[in-house]
Amino acid sequence: MWLQLSVTVFLSSFVLTSYGQDAERGASLGRSISPRDGRCQYTFTVAAPAEPTGCPPPAAAAAADQMEGVLSRLGLLEALVSRLVGGQRGGGTSRTGPRADASDQVPPQGEKNQLQRDKEQLSGRVQELLRLVEQLGAEAETLRQKPCPPDQADHGPSGNAALRVPDRSYQEMKAEVTEVPASSLLPEGGHNITGCGELVSVGEPLLHRKADSITGKYGVWFQDPEPPQGPAQGPLYTNRTVWRIDTVGKDVRQLFAYEDAEQFSRGFPLKVLVLPEPVESTGATLYRGALYYQRRRSRTLLRYDLASETLAARRDLPHAGFHGQHPYSWGGYTDIDLAADELGLWAIYSTPRAMGAIVVSQLDPQSLAVRRSWTTGVRKNTVANAFMACGRLYTVASYSVTNTTLNHVYDTTTGLGRAIAVPFRNKYRYNSMVDYNHAQRKLFAWDNHHMTSYDITLGRR
Image 1 (cartoon, helix red, strand yellow):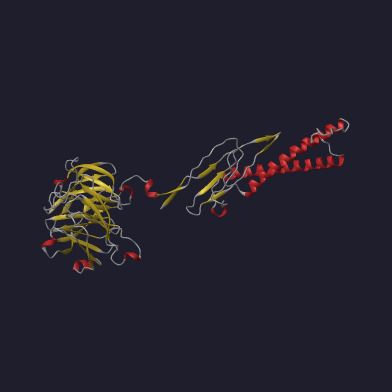
Image 2: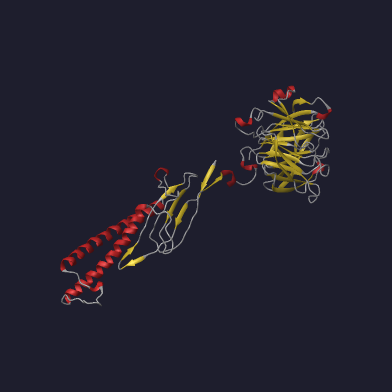
């Protein structure tokens, strides 16, 4: 949903020149809607002495030009009539000879009468033009107080309309209609999303598949909560597609794709992709058609585009610990854990400055740049795992105790954290991965070779 803000009003220059008791008050009016972005614009324009007008409507510009010409001719006629009247009173004589000025010569009586008639006609024309100016001024005021209807917009040559108003000020004001996402008008945080309150409960784990070799003791598996749309993405890239990586090994590069959950449970992959850089541990995540993961033995983050099967972005996570500096309590080089929720892409890690406390950073999904960071009061090596949901960080107390809890929550909206005790079950007693899928409102987990999921309940916002 998109909202339109502000209205465009244009006031340009105006110059007022008096001719006796009459004044030239050229005014023109117009309004427009941009065909590109639906902007409604009003423009008030009057020519400044040293500045040309912008885009005056033809009728208003012609009226102003006609008035200027008529007033000029009227002034000359008044001068001639005055001289004629003076000549009659003085006996009708005039100067002649080589030094006589052409403007002092008095025309014959017939020409005097014609000039008088011309003066009367021009005076009538002036009055007519003044009435037109008054009408334009009234129309300007009416239009300025009502919205611009799409079907009545008068588009100028540049897509903006011009409006002349009688005013002695010389100024220019402009405020344009701007379209912004409605979400940007709401406070930051998942609290704005319906049903995105704090996590209330976690259900029992549901088994989907068990790995059949030692390489599957640890790993990650997920479905894309926001897959790309369109036929160009092919059959692999729907929200039904299941993705899996076995993370035991020194050079982990294989990404398995399964058509749906049934094929995943049966162990029949649709395709196996070979990643260009090796994966470090179980901190990868899937979001909007890309695999996000940490490059082995580095703080480098990678975005692997699944449609083109190429690396689309790489960036170091500033000051992040890696390869055993700040892992979760179970080890496994889990220094950097990537996550996605209703608010976007996140990194869960620590830094030397944070002295082992969990740092949460929101990342740009395209560039991987850090948008904003929060330092929590939870030491990373004292919790078994963590995930993001509705802009909140949740930590798991133990990876091996069967009946454990989610023991901390940190809200990035308020910057506050607190202890909680939401029951959580490690059925197979070695849970190395917990990830949240906001489309399904489920947790995905990898518990000692077993790929499981949990239904969760979120409170109202």
